[in-house]
Amino acid sequence: MTASHPRTLETEIPDILQAMSRVHGAIGRYGFDRMLEHLVFLRVSQINECSYCVKMHTEEARADGETNDRLDRLIVWRHAEEFSDRERAAFAWAEALTELDGRTDIAALRETVRAHFSETELGVLTSLVAMINLWNRVQISQD
Image 1 (tube, rainbow, N blue to C red):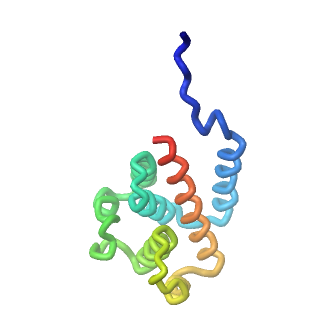
Image 2 (tube, helix red, strand yellow):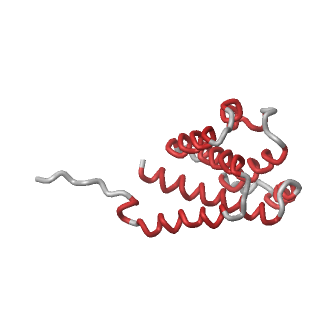
Image 3 (cartoon, one colour):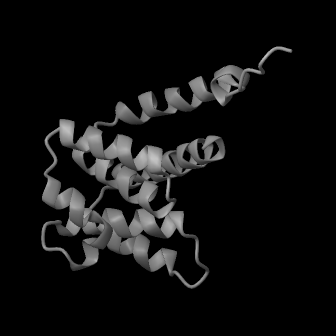
């Protein structure tokens, strides 16, 4: 009897995963703030409880110079002084798009976010949030 080899999404649907990766290349061409991208990815991964992604995005943020103090306090960003108004707007947007709640006034929140981001930046931020939610779900499905 032969031991069965575990199948992974990388072996089963590599073309889909490659297409998902190419989206990040397209997003990257807009020059969005890399440090904020790390923090958004990390915050969404915390919400989704994707341990693999939390570890990966924490390590990437540290490698790019993010401080441990800010990383440690990201989960309580509303109560931490380390974050700018722009970052806070991004976190609020990321949380609203991750934890879809009918009570959230997305239109009002969008106006708040627009005070800190151009329309293009808002589109990029929204795309980043959508992609990390997708990656979290893909990763969680394999854990």
